[in-house]
Image (cartoon, rainbow, N blue to C red):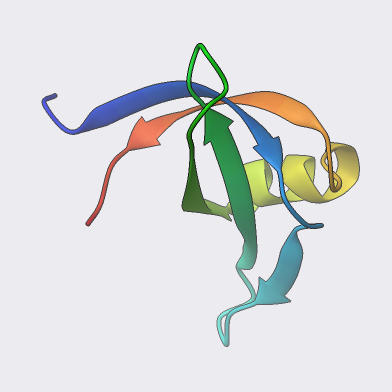
Length: 74
């Protein structure tokens, strides 16, 4: 898979949780990633579905550090 990403990130704000019309849970997150020298940062939007969204809702909050792994979509 060429568009995969693994990064150490931190949450910029609490996850936004919603349900689709079919009842699936979705968590939208905004995360920051710092470079090794901490001079630059980038921000990414993350979308978790179903069970992963439930885990994000339960354990992730603003400022929490975590590892994100998934597919990069631009």
